[in-house]
Every structure is written in C-alpha cells, then in structure tokens.
Image (cartoon, rainbow, N blue to C red; front, side):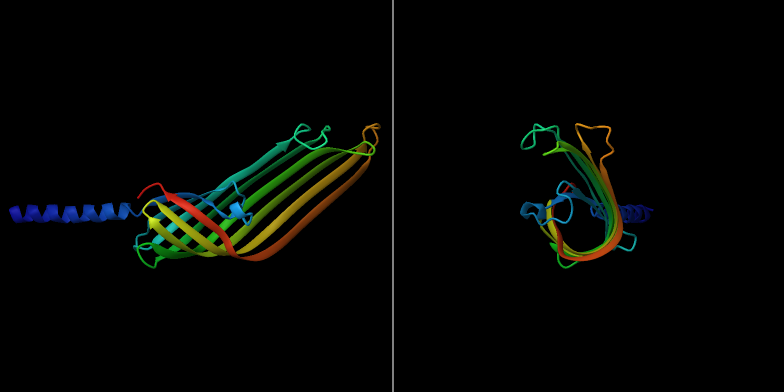
Amino acid sequence: MALAILSTFTTYGQTKKKQNERDTTKQWEIGLDLLWLIDKNHVPPTTLFVRYNFVNDKNEKRAWRFRLGVDYSTYDSAQLPNPRDNEIDIVAPYMRLGYEWQKEINQKSSYFFGVDFSAFYSQYKAKIVIYPGPNLLQATDKTWEFGAIPFIGFKYRPTKWLAISTEISLNFIYRIRREEDKVTDINFPNDPGGQSKIDVNDFTTGFQPISVINLCFYLTK
C-alpha cells in the first residue's frame, strides 16, 4: 500500500511539473517598431505590437500577433504659418492580426513565419483659405486598405525579458479611396463654386526586405 501511495504521489508530481513547465511557455511580448526612428517604417509609428507565445498539444511553438494603433492630428489657424481661418483634421486607425509558427535555432535565437491580416482607415478633412480670392477650399479624403501579409523573421533574445526581431514580408493590399474637393468664393458663399471627385479602387503587391524591427519586452519570463 505504501509503495502504491508513493507511486501515486510521484506520478502526480511529475504530471504537475510537466504542467508547470508547459505553463511557462505561455508568454506575452509587447513592443514597438524601431524603423520610425530613421523614417523607414512601413507601419504607423504609433502602433503597439503584442505577441502571445504558446505551445500547442503537439509541443510545437506558436504565437498569436496583434498590432494596434491610431494616428490623430488636428491643426487650427494658430498652428499654421500665416494664420488664417484654416482647419485640418487627420485620423488614421490601424490594426493587424496574425498567426506565426516558431522554430528554435538555439536557446537565444529562433526563426518564425506566418501571415498577418491588416485593416487601415485614413480620413483627412481640411478647410483652407486660399489667396488671392479669397477662396475657401473644403477637402475630404477617405482611404480604406485591407491586406494579407505573409512574413518570415528572425528573433534574438539576449535576456529573459528582452527580444529583438526583424521580418521580411510580402504585401497584398486592396485599397479604396474617395476624395472630394470644393472651392467657393468667400465673398459669394451662395455660389456653387468648383467641385471635383476622385474614386479609386486598386490592388497592389509589394516586397519589403526589412518590414519591421521590433523591440519587445516580455511581461512573463
């Protein structure tokens, strides 16, 4: 009976240890793309990168990836050269969701590959006084982008809490753009003035040999 009880505790202890070891592979990373520092970024500079690393049932390393952010800026006549009754507003939210497969090279380095799906929206609105005239330009430019981005990358982890990675990507982007401009004479506000519209739908592909350089910090060791 004593041997049976001891065997039970030993088996339980081994199972618990394996479970604990499995849990330590579930790690969160959070970081930023460094390419904006040299004005070579391909993603908006304000976006935040998050990666959730885990091991699946086959003991294979995988990760979910997220990149979220928004650019927002507004200008009034006090912020523009030669102050006039000018207003410019820009808002541009950005989101990417992806999945990656990971392969270890050694304890500190690994390579990975996968695919991201992206969504981007940009809205530009402006009211600008133009001289001579004076004329008022009212412009609206809206752009939607949807994409699939296969990638392959390399990650180096110098410490338990820090990692740096770089990626090569191939972009497939579908873009929808709607632009409307209207110019009216300020002295004759009831005059319909001149108007123009641009509607563009296009599909583009592009290869980026260095698409991002992520500096990430581990939230769990």
